[in-house]
Amino acid sequence: MSIRLRDHRRLLALAAFACLAWVLLSSRADAAKQPDSSDPKARGATAARPDRLAAARGGAPPNILVIVTDDQRKRGSMSVMDDTRRLFARGGVTFPNAYVTTPQCSPSRASLFSGQYAHNHGVTDNQNSPNLDPDETFQRYLDENGYRTGFFGKYLAGVNRREEIPHFDESFIGTNPEHATHDPRQDSFIAGKATRFLRQAEERDRAPWLLVVGFRSPHKPFKPERQYRNAHVPGFESNPATDETDFSDKNPSLSNAQVPGYISRRNPRGQRRMLLSVDDGVERIFSTMERRGEQDALSFYTSDNGYYWGEHDLTGKFLPYLDSLRVPLFMRWPGVLPENTTDERLAANIDIAPTILQATGAQARHQIDGRSLLASGSRDWLMFEGAPISNHDGWPSWRRSYFDMTSHYFRWLDDFEELYDLDSDPWELQNIAGERPDEVAQARARLEAAADCAGASCP
Image (cartoon, rainbow, N blue to C red; front, side):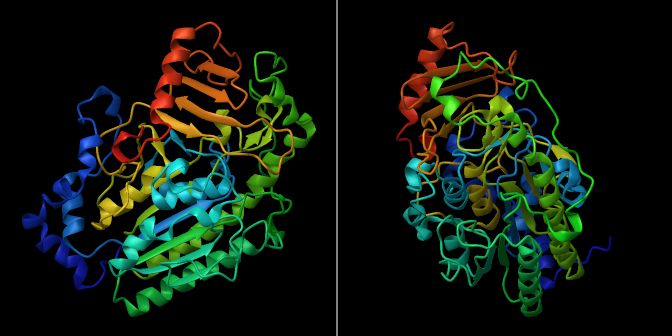
């Protein structure tokens, strides 16, 4: 692969390195909420080296690429995406412990753009997408800092495809399931829109660019593109949670959300076939960047939420068991971040916005709850927030969830509580809330204290 430097702006990065090496270290107040890198909890962190990051910040602002899929779970979904794994996993940093703070399309995407929990940005379910303040998003701050901005694909549920998205110079909303025709060619079309934006941005080459691509796949209905309708991909693969038969320890109303196994077992193959088109789109985008010498952009790949493939007899998302919360997350920045590296810190969708702001030097004027993945600290725990499930009659709703990678506690709206020891029970099969009242009380207290958190006070 030939690597070409950009124009004279890239050379300025090296020239300015000596005098700006400390810019990054003093640019954000986030340091106050970051534990020292010597903290044992921060081990495995792959934060950018300050010298490389300062050098990058001393030159032209980096181009930014954010790729978001729809309903792509972490477990088992990336195996068919050879190009994406080559570009992101081998070419950058993998976050195996990445989660979304609310497992529903609009709240999760609003958290990605704003860096906030749902209780702060106000998009608490798919019905109130307009609550997101576009002036409190990373795209607003990059737009103000002279970036050429483009958005193509799914934005927030309920946003009409004819609407312009504030702070994006170019946009095309074509993949909202509520408004789209479910044409399986949409992902190829969106990739084409994205590559056209890149070509035009680089032909002018007068400003850095921000490109956000929202692929529809692998959201239902599971209709792959024609060339992949019969592609050989893995189908259903059982695990202890799909084999679970005794649900007596779980919320009794969970039965309203459970489905026969044959329904959920059809989903893995359909979703994987759809992801083949996403993989093609990712490769097209990076090939376009490479041809124009722009493969050194800061890039992210993630999903808006996970998905159940029959775990606990569930399909879909929304609920607090981990497979709807856990998502793939990759980050690459050639020359600044190491390649083929794993970062085991607890990461979330609310961390993408502060990472972009730190990399670009843009300053937020609203409180951000997440923390930059470029910094070296780590969080002790993460809060998940439930959302009303208005379009699924009878499904139980939940309040909040406490998660620290060794235990997972959540409380349903009817006050039923569940606690799982993830060291001995990673599949969440045995609810031990009744056996550990002290641990339940501690988790409940931490959640109550964080219920209205903002900024540095948030987990």
